[in-house]
Length: 452
Image (cartoon, rainbow, N blue to C red):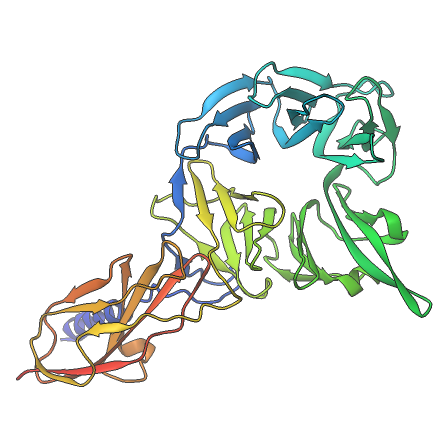
């Protein structure tokens, strides 16, 4: 009798679990139990192990951890291997324009852990440009590349990394001669430049701020133009992201994410906000302020400036560990996600900070009665979220308590059929739309009653 009662209790618990299963996204810091948002990213045919991507005149060039350089004529075409730099990792790609030629010529620059290479804008004629240091005779590790206009006729190409002594290298003649600089502490692993204002006396002035991340665990960045002491944390800086609307800068490290407003940056104040203990390998922000983080423990998205994060999952059954996010330009609404097994593309289609449109319920109509116990529920499409899924809730309680609500992920469908509803019973139902970019509010709550 004792065992029989235990079995009955187990069946009751299982039954309740099935009824209260909850695929709904919950805003939680991912150190806690992860609630996944599924679907919405589209698989593309970029190569595996991609960690960097650039678009040159509609052609997509990608670099891998194995030193491979691929060309995709479109995101959905098969990648074409253009070249391999043996025993290297491709750390960054950059579009360089030679303004001294008529017409101007574009080149693909490739930064690796064994120097700088270049190819033409089609990815052909791969050649070395700057491999070893003339001061240390060591390979130059390159993480960042930029081209700066000095005057109306002169452009300077600068690369950032490490040769064992120096961390910035510049040329004005496309690699014929180089200047060496030892500006920062250790290897420069990331760099971002933006403008802000600084109060001087009773007025203000516009200043250029350079955030430069280093791999020295004692020092993480230097702001070159402001002569402010380095920000110190016990982690490696992987990248920066800057929200131009909110004037907030984010710093992704090997031990979580830090943030600082422009005013706080000028006062050297940063705060760790999320993903403590995570190696945040990449961090991008879309034009609408959505943050995407690729980490060693999966891919995540935040809609509220990094306060809470949602884990991202897809329909392709990979874990998304060792994830990298990249965008087209530093501030875009197009994102790319690279994992060990798959590549994806997605778009942030929001037109404002919030999703203001909810699904409209179609059938069963509100206050319907005498309905059969098998029903096909229907609702209208929500058009302001791309590749959206729908979450339907049905309950006998209008407040939809968690322990007495059935949550149904209808995926991208606009209908869902439920069989074996109880007879002569009042039900309440509602629907929301969601994607990796966010979710709508729930629709209005409709009620109906089944027949006897």
